[in-house]
Image (cartoon, rainbow, N blue to C red; front, side, top):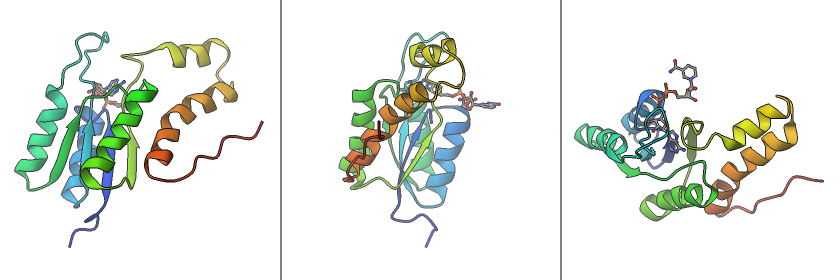
Length: 148
Ligand SMILES: NC(=O)c1ccc[n+]([C@@H]2O[C@H](COP(=O)([O-])OP(=O)(O)OC[C@H]3O[C@@H](n4cnc5c(N)ncnc54)[C@H](O)[C@@H]3O)[C@@H](O)[C@H]2O)c1
């Protein structure tokens, strides 16, 4: 039995580079993996499902379990859809590895943080919350808002 048998993982930005390697490694150890990638070019144009599908095909060819997802993780509703993909296809979500480079598709949240100073923790917390809230809620847990 592989170490991650029965576990379900979402890896964002998994169509290329580091995310693709993480997705392959998790699948090789037995996890069912949702391979998320918007498939954007460096200039943010032309989203394409090809990179995510290629990684899924490679995992399947090696005997692993994976499904492709093309949602934009910089968008709250799309991130929620991503989490729901894991739950609907595999019943739950155990692991989230967030590698996507959202700067490509939506630089605005990061620009807002940087333009008001690198240590604006409130804005950073809001950005993190928009990513993790759907993960917690999608997994059936209650979301506890930050105090204040
Ligand atoms: N490669 C390196 O040497 C290196 C070093 C230090 C840090 N990093 C960081 O690691 C992360 C990954 O780097 P990489 O080299 O694997 O990048 P990469 O460009 O090879 O892959 C990133 C993937 O993210 C996808 N993506 C972009 N925006 C997305 C979005 N909104 N939703 C879903 N998918 C989206 C892209 O389509 C792309 O396939 C980046 O944050 C990068 O800054 C990389």
